[in-house]
Structures are given as structure tokens and as C-alpha cells.
Image (cartoon, rainbow, N blue to C red; front, side, top):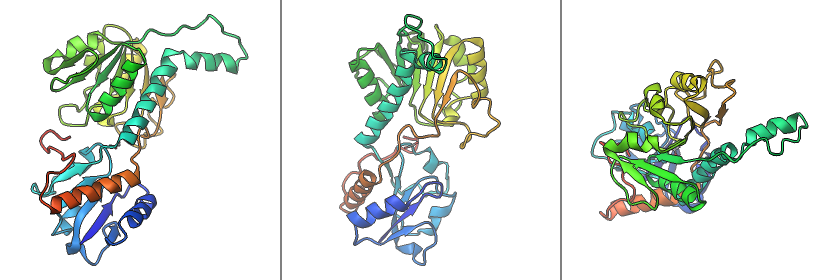
Length: 306
Ligand code: GLV
């Protein structure tokens, strides 16, 4: 039995080191170049090339090296009977929440304005306020819920939205209550998975429905947003700013107007990175349960895409 890591766009050195430390008895293949493809029973993947997993004729488990699984499922050649599991890691939630807090608090405490004052050696006491924020978390799955709870515990008004109703300590909306949800807020944190339903969700039509100029924080997937609509909404004042970690095309092309927009902050898809040690622990646990015929933790529903 072998495990394989198929993740062409990411560095795999740390993954390999962790795997070999935790499971020295299991042969590991990095990439597709193996003489023994029929021995690979578990593939850990991040953006695997389309069709590449079909070489592994005895594959039993696919494990997403990230929280999202759109990168796995866009490959429609994966046989339907192979279970797909994904990493669900409290450390990733900690990291994601801190990223969202960084974006939120910089906006709330007028950090960029103070920074501009500092650049001019200007003492701007009493010039900027604590902006009143009402935070909407769109997508309260594992990561979104963690962030929403922490923001709520800090004392900010929080509103959640998810496909199906969830029990929350703060007001939350579901299904056809979307408009009601966005009417409550002036900060929109997007943490939905990418699915055909969320494709292009953050568009001008939605921005026009916002009751107040809203600060957008997107930590989900680039294709959930329509970037030209974000620029238009910022210029029209429907959005008061945007803090974006993900983009329609990554790396963000140098020609994108987002780079130079005064109201846009950009990070290069780093809101929450996966931790190889915990992911390796989880994939090994998952595979061992599979072999024993037990239920699999964090198994992906292929129709829901999460
Ligand atoms: C990162 O984007 C992930 O899905 O973990």
C-alpha cells in the first residue's frame, strides 16, 4: 500500500517530512511519477491535474489537502465510488478567524487613516472614529462559524447566513432569508464554499441590495466574486472597501485594477494555510477507518460540494 501527494502548485517538502516522520512504514509518492501506480491506495491532493488520479487503479481514498474541495471536484474523471474527505482543523479555524479579525479591526479602528497620518507626521487625534460595524458572515460552516462566534464574543453585532438553518448564539438566517440577512449588515465576510450556486454570488446586483455602504472581506474562493462588479460598487460607494484574499484568477494578474484601487487590500490566498502535521494525522486516521469499514470523518457530499 502506498500514499501519494499530488499537489503541483504547492511546496510539498514539509508534507513529505511530516508524513515520513508520522508514518515511516508507509511508502509515499510525491507527484505522478511512480513505477507502482496500482499500489497507491490513498491520494492526498491539491489541484490535481485533470485525469491524473485515474492512473491509480486501486485508489480507495482521496483526501483534500485544503478545507475547500472545489479544486478536487473540478476533475470530473474521478470515479464516483471513491470517497473524498477533507481536512477540518481547529488551527486552520484559529488562523482564518485571526485573518478576518485583522481585516475587520483595521476597518473598525480606522487603521489605514491613522497610517496615512503617520506617514505625514500628523497627530490626528479625534479625527477618526471607531466605525460602528454590523458583521454578516455569509457561510457559517466550520470556519465561518468559528469566526462568527469569536466576533460575537468580542461584542460586535454578528449575523450569520447559511443554506440550511443553524443553531447560533447570534441572529442567523437561512435559505430564502438572504435579503433579510444582507439588510442587517455593513461588513460582509464571505466564507462560502465554491459551488455552482455560489459562482459569481458577490456581484453588483447583490451590492445594490445592501442597505449601507459595506466593507467586503472575501476568504472563500475567487470565483464567488465578480471583480469588475466589486470595482464598480466601490466607485459608486455601495462598498466602502474590500479586503480580498482570493481572486478569479490566481496569481492576480498585474493588469487587475484591484492592485491599485485605494479602497482595496490584497493578500495572496493566505487567509488560512493547511498544517501538514495535522492533515497527515487526519488522512492516516481516515484511511485506517476506511480499512476497518468505519464511517469517515469529514467526508464530502459530492452533490453539495462540501
Ligand atoms: C484553502 O483555500 C483551503 O481550501 O484550505
